[in-house]
Length: 92
Image 1 (cartoon, rainbow, N blue to C red):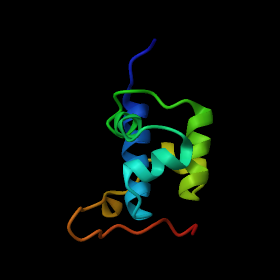
Image 2 (image 1 turned 90 degrees about the vertical axis):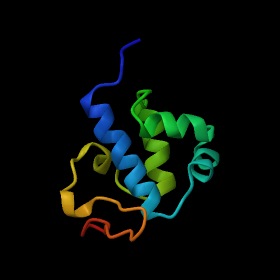
Image 3 (image 1 turned 180 degrees about the vertical axis):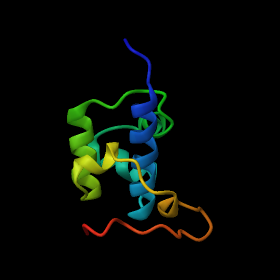
């Protein structure tokens, strides 16, 4: 099994970003796609790689295009836990 790499880190960060933008907990997302919150946490931290089929399920649960997971976001779109300053991309 291969270890997570830089792309996995981008996917994990984006997964967290869009999950928080949807105001969904790791547990809620996990239930929506049939995974434990611990597995969602591992994906977000890039400790585990996300299978494409799982990523498709997650994109459906979050109601976002799958391509957004591997697209690097601009720094202005970063999540802050206090203010949630970030916005969803113009595509929405």
